[in-house]
Image (cartoon, one colour):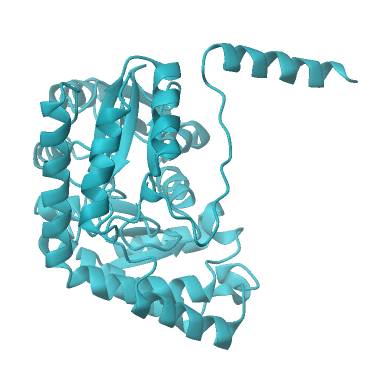
Length: 378
């Protein structure tokens, strides 16, 4: 019976040799590190209005939702949040899940009817990839942001129902998908477009309504939007926004919605407050764009290979997985936390440091962090 543990040890040794060991790094509430690794883009997770709203709901409702949404987990806060999110994104209805991951699994499964072809961008997030796998539908992976390849795949589908799946701003390099062109192709083939707006919501588009809104596609009947509430809104949970019949279908049949404990009411209350701040946050978005551009200039001047960010993700290429790990560790030793992306998390096999701009970090500390990243570069 111990053989399976030996096998796990063998796999761990192989990962360590390849520089792919992962470690949990607990932090204290008073952690002094400059955080350019988390996804609190607009600095709202600690905003006084957000914290106060969550605290009041915590006192009123208690710690958890106590059940699934269809049992006792739905509260007036969940309903209010869904209404506000739908209005913000210009959708008929929105549905809140306990995580963005579950929202993506549920969305893909709901759209993958018998015989459906799923066409997935090569740089899509793991939750979209897993959604395709769990759906059981045939999946074709197309080269990153390649509209011609999507068009060819739809042509080859020969009238089968099809869903094109993409992120808006991609989590790997922070680049923007060609959404208008993708939608034109999708509509011409009578297909559907599923867009994960996780890294765009709150950051681009009118009133920060995301990449779909920025592309002028808000409310289109052949477009479905998912996102997380844990990035620019500083909370937790996920959302799906789209036509009302789809939301109704998910409430009736969506396993990741039906059989999961609801988002805690205190989190829903905090996200409600954060959504209002994000909608009115043009100044925050301008500051984020300025900081992202500043990071690109600083890294480029230092001879580093850096992405051209559409939002708050700035990706810097590393020579390999081990150097990426040591680079991030050296930055952390000097008080700066940055993300470290290595295979298999990177779809193209390249290793990167990923800096996520956080306007909640004082500007002087942000600029100092850029210097640290450059000085620690391998």
